[in-house]
Image (tube, rainbow, N blue to C red):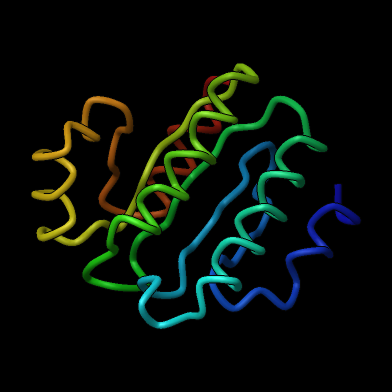
Length: 129
C-alpha cells in the first residue's frame, strides 16, 4: 500500500494520503493553476493507485481552495466512480459555500455527501466499509 502511494509523493495537483482504508485526495488548487499535462498525468497516477488498492473508501478534501472548475470536478468524478465501482464509498469535505452551490446546480450533491471537516468525514467513512 505504501509503495502505491510513493508514486504520488511529488504530486503538484493532487495530494494523496491513506488514513486506514480511506484514500484522502486533496486538490492543491484549481486546474488553471497547473499545466494540463500535470493535471491529467497525476489523475492517471491516482487512478492506477486506486486500481492497485482494491476496495477502499475515498475522501476528497476541498479545503485547499474556494473554487474548483470543471477539470478538477471531472477528475474527482472519475476517481469517485472508480471507487464506487469497486464497492467503496465516496465523500467530500471542506467545500466552500461557493463549491456547495456549484455542486447543487450540477446535482453532484446527490452523488457525494459533504462533511464540514476532514475529521468528521474520516470518522463517518471509517465506520462502515
